[in-house]
Length: 214
Image (cartoon, rainbow, N blue to C red; front, side, top):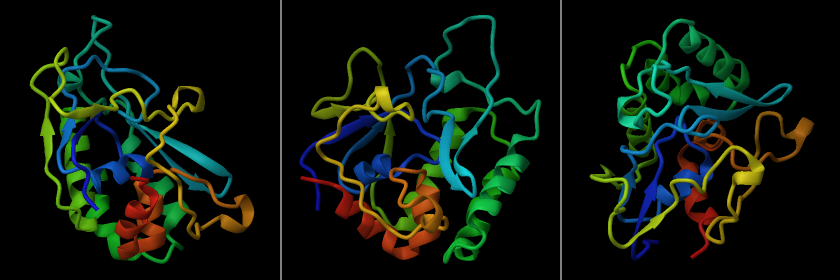
């Protein structure tokens, strides 16, 4: 299933299922690199499911003197040991999932090495997951903020962790799958791609396609 046009997205840290459903379908994908950083978004936040419910994993960033910092220039902060904490939380949530051991080594590397810039870090993560899922799309970076790429649907602000800011999406319908804590919480939709990957393994790609409504 291929879509006839391209799509423009913000960068994202272990982006949610809805985000990856776009990557699985659109032939051209642009990632915005010239926008100013926006707090409390998926740009530096992933949401997974733990024993006590959804957990936000937040990548801390350096705060400069200027309030507005372009996303391509935004540096990751290592003042706290967030990488170790993130991986411990992920391990605790998913070590009993069917495919955790299968993918753990490939993904743990992102919590052992330090990246300077958030955009580069996110790009590497997303490209690795695309490779794991065998999704043959190449991520392109934008040349300009004011003039989005032609023939691209602009979803830079449309996929958001805050429900009241998360735009209705006629192209996405969350498909349920068995999660580690399904018996406790029921199905929790649109979590980080980590949740789908660890629970569904190689079937995750088809799940993304099934979530897309053409």
